Length: 144
Image (cartoon, rainbow, N blue to C red; front, side):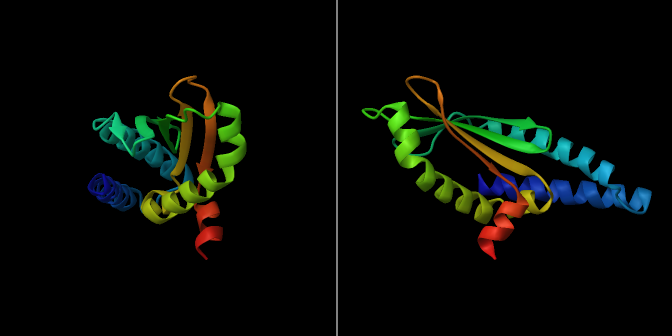
């Protein structure tokens, strides 16, 4: 999976330099347009390996692009706990672990203004348990 991120970033960098050479400098609107394309391509490429088992409780079921955000959707088997108890007891721990992991492992996307969102749904009820939005500002504050 890490290889795909590196490959996509290389493609992103090559595309950016080509556009910059053609226009002299990349405007913020062109950069956003380019980021939308990179996000779509990344989601399509990363989705090819899904669903993927992360651990005995967690499965990554889909990845999609939403403007310049990569949205990762997971399902968690939380039994015998209830949705409400997981939301209450595990939110802070999950948010901290997920955010730190994304900040460390997705620097290239984040530095390019591509945000990442992790959504965790219950395997049984299909309801949303957690949603974490991560961008370069959040990571800058964590990793400084």
